[in-house]
Length: 507
Image 1: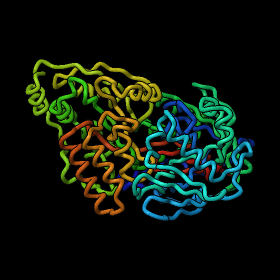
Image 2: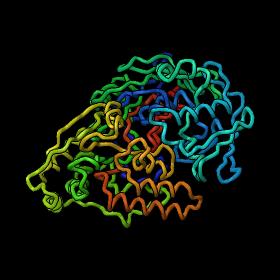
Image 3: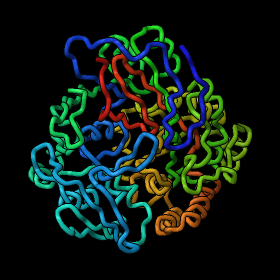
Image 4: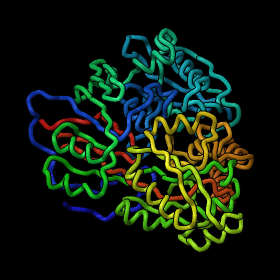
């Protein structure tokens, strides 16, 4: 296996870091033009207003189109929207593609965009927080719509890359539940069937407005065990598998059946506290937990250096990124014990530790290592492992899940506002880290059109979060590691979306 040195990639880069022996080539077996994608966990909902996890978006991206689209390099390009312009400080005019139809023949246009925004904003799902900046919409004509925001908002176009457009007539006819069971979009593939716990099948849309995809059918499956995913790749049952553990890279290389693609990702891994509930309601306990974790050893020995240390919340390249004034929380178990002693936990304490299985790279192994390090300073963890869909549901049910949870954040649009709104907004999807100060600063930041002013605000916000609030154990930014069949031409993206619009098979 030829391995290139791991490089700290900037946000939006898509540098291929590892190529495993085996070149793209060969011939197709018969007329098999279908592929199988195996993720570590199953999408819990196919309605994009309800589920926004990247493992869900990977399937949704085959079925739906957004107004604007992010390239693998992070650029923003027209998609269902052809162009956009600022009419006044709170009005964005969006011009739309003509002659686009949903899979059932329903026409796409300004009414569909207005309906979609209204549906996102009234949803009870995960997509709800991201368009609350909208005051109302005004349909100008069939292919022009104005978005009127409550205050000036400089990132409206960025947020539209997250907005998958829904068919109004069909959505109203079948309702949210019916839509999630049989979704319809304008995308390159059409829904075929879903066998929950088994597979989701889609087939190419021959009338796709951007041209017919080369792949005939995609089957999305899930396997929580990494060894199972690798076995599926090596036996030809899978064409893409996610989260290949470092100890299995050589196995793929030696087989001659596949290759590994690895990219520096945008996914930040942390442990999030319930800071309102004892014993984590004292900031000294939260600081102690940070000092108790040897992040460098975790990265080196568990992840085999397929991650880099994280300092704070923002990613390199984001507005306001400046880790120089952020506390690093280097490994210091003696300081951790001292802080716990100050709070009255010299004899130890117990916390609930919730975590997903199969969602992130070696998530279960990392959680067990973290629990072991905490045990060394007198913290006993009661472990609760489950699939990511179940974890998100218990986390979000009343925003009061006990103890702490192993989780992550990866931007769905390339602006710091997503990081803040996802975890530090009292009306957001994850409210555990929010308070009055985070609410105040994130709203100030999104209301300014001055980039330098936004940078100043976000630096103040990140310093407050990291140095004073300490709502997380700040861990690492993980790499994305895929196993890919040699018969498939496809490249991984740093945003973790498995985009198969332009994928092809060897001829």
